[in-house]
Length: 380
Image (cartoon, rainbow, N blue to C red):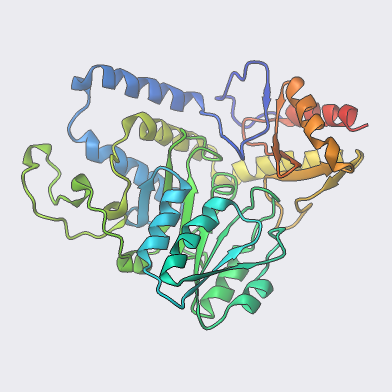
């Protein structure tokens, strides 16, 4: 099995199996970045309408990616932007409770911990390994619970949530379900119009292969309409679209996702290459990308069976993700094994003293086999 896309790299002779950390830019995105730089060097090339056109083009592509509507998309600069927007904008009060998952990534937890001064209680569910199911969530919900916030795929354990089952458990009890999709969107397919979730926050620089400092949130229309998070960015709030009318102080009545965008939403140097990266991924179709990535994961797991390693992430089923987390039977050897992989030109991750491999559409079976060869040699 060859790489699904050949529009990545060159990787300087190395093999990048660390998409869960950073997704590389495809060449069309790099070319778009070069064009954006050239336009900034000669600003006369930047038309006035580009300040609105670029954010709207990006918003439309992100909406199509997740199955939402453009007016439900908030443009940000990280996953944390959307999570903080929600944590602050929901205006939770003293006595309210937020559930988070023990073992989740800090970005999913910290925005809610900040609410403690206002009397909001944050309670952890699970045993610390991120293996949380609908029954665990249902048992944890109390009459005070207002929100469950959790990652779809957990960075340190590779475990994926059953969004449908957990979302139903939340909604049946009147609880909002907010999802961090950064380790899933781009490698897993979602339709937010059908999924029982209320908001989805994601970065653009992992599985979506965009520049660092990009992100977005999809927020359901009824939740979006009730957010109380005033941050009046003048360009988003003005009712007109003509930069020659900047002294018109009339506020737009549209309270769509754009009202909560990060400042400087044109952001040509980041958003134009991200648009190109999204278009490149979309050219294969999300189902094709998911199938390719899962085939690589399956090949790696099959090869790992014969080696002296213990699998941490799920082997199969809906809980399996594109992150393979594992450990040598002697965990103290993991740092040396990670170093041996790097010395052989294979880039993986060492997280919480465990090894992690995360292939994407630019990888093929030869990359997987090369990693397994080093793991066999280093693990003896």
